[in-house]
Length: 163
Image (cartoon, rainbow, N blue to C red):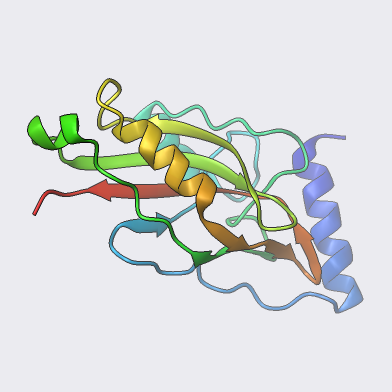
């Protein structure tokens, strides 16, 4: 059985049991943190997100058992505390600004794992590394499928702006 078929069967079983809540919109954070949806190509119902990932050259294959918010009845994780990434002195001197796009899995307990850079703003002066560190130190309420907490993959955008 393919992962997509297993996910659909699980969603149908949850829906039939009456244990699911209507899907909610993804949380909206500050301008510096934007939770979105990652886009592994094998997920049914996520064609729009898959097209975006392909257009940007993002490789978003996650392990089996990781859900996506574009799947039926999956509720996105919610940021509880967002750690703002720090500028490095070298990046400030170089006046580097931009958005780092990260993919991560928010686990059943709200912990962050499998963080990777999808779109870099700076590979040499430490901004990408600081973005990854900030996401790892942030806390989340886990995603859900019905009444169960499940690991959910997300895309997180962190913006670096000089004042």
